[in-house]
Length: 258
Image (cartoon, one colour):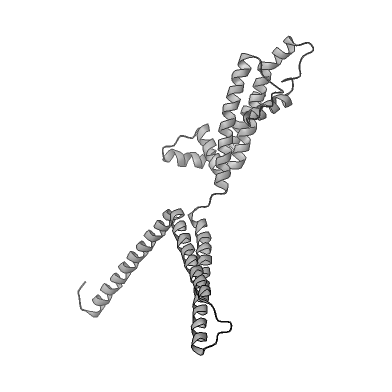
């Protein structure tokens, strides 16, 4: 069983794109040594979900088989009739999964010294696999700078629209009050409290817009700096092209000699 699992891992490493001859040549030119660890790292980066499930399945089956090797003779010799714990791969698989998930129902336990040390290794490996799973899930929901830009733009546009609407509403209420006061009409005239409420709503909308912009700037500071640097670079190149065109025009007009 363990040999079969080893051959499965070897076959998975061979199927990796980094194990091809052209990939080995590229890595050799850059001074990289392609080994099993490097292949697993590249596979985890390229295909995180598939690689994680492959590592999890192989490790669980391997540790379950080792526990059967350590525990089955003890339960067969020390109990009459023999207890069914670890007699089947299914029970050992269940014990490994429960230990890795930190559930530990206690219905199946290890009794030998080697089995207990193996249980400690299973618990530690479970913590590693869970942290790796959380990292993969976090990467799935992580948005990079170019993906965040539309989200930030939509949020800022929405807040800006609310601020403009609140400002227009405040201006309309204030003008309507002054107009009705000048005409001497008291019916349906906006009160001073209505004007203050509209002004407060406008100030709140502007405050929310500024808060949204500052929040987006903090989250997307790196990509904004990159865009600003790219803008400066484009402006410098544009000025360089205009300067070359200006010099060429002076040469053609005979004002300066080449």
